[in-house]
Image (cartoon, rainbow, N blue to C red; front, side):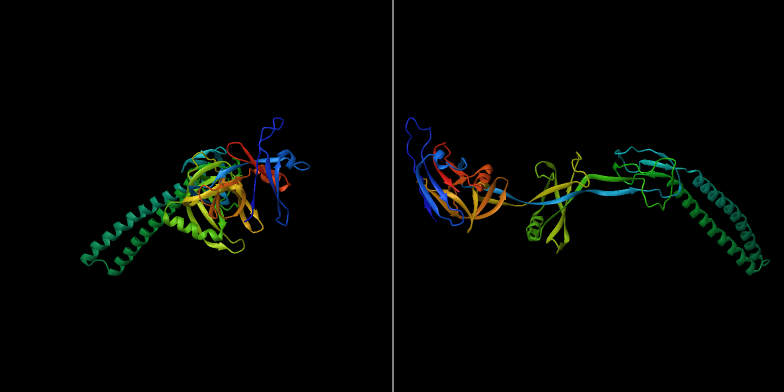
Length: 397
């Protein structure tokens, strides 16, 4: 670990109102540092990009929730293609495109006249057979009376009993035919299988539709609740499983830019296989979606909380740098000496990162803003400013 002194002096009356600084220069590729003393920021950056302000932050302890985020899509609870179950002319369509419908609500109607006629015919056939059954039953009763008196043979009695039994079976078949005809007639009223939203109408009234048609009249989707299917890397599987064992795992759906919260819900299930081609696995979360911000087929980002790190040491994420030997921070000593201090960085949550080793609570670190990071990459000088606004020095990168 190499230390670099940062010295200051008071400027003259003609100088600008800030302290003179010591500049640390990190030689690109070889890690050699040069100390510039009593150099103004303007002079330190002469001939190159202007200084970039930075600030100082303290490492602190904090309870940090740990999240995993995966990309996925929204799915409806179920999707149903609306088809006709009988052949006939589409007489009427009662739904509007995009309309919310209730279960068993009539969506369309097929011309019912032929099916009504078939039902009436089946009922008439049953009535006819029931009338024949009455006559056969009376004959059977007479045969039995004569048989008791010895005036009728057992053979004739058995034959008459067979006729009665046969007619009973015929009547049962008539009842089945009536039920079939009634079902066919009921199918002429096409009903919604569940609550949901109707899609575009694909068939207009007046067309002949058939049960065997491959196309559908419309699509019904139920997106309340909505499902979010997403993927995570295979190495996170044990963490997710342990989180589910502890109880309900909260899931938050963001838009594809991971900026706006669309809905909150719970993790429902983990797929039973890992995809060896991508080394990832699928998960499914359920969202109430009462405001319908989640739309089936939409790309979303799903975040789940798997644990909470109690009293973890955290620093602002912009304070963490990557060097040839790994992650490090610019730490400040009591004498305002900048020190490149290696650390073991843990998960990043929002704008903070957990430090699993290398720092203690209260340690001061240099925090670089995102613009400063970009300018550093171009060779800019980062000016170090303490919390009270006093200039400490400059680090040339």
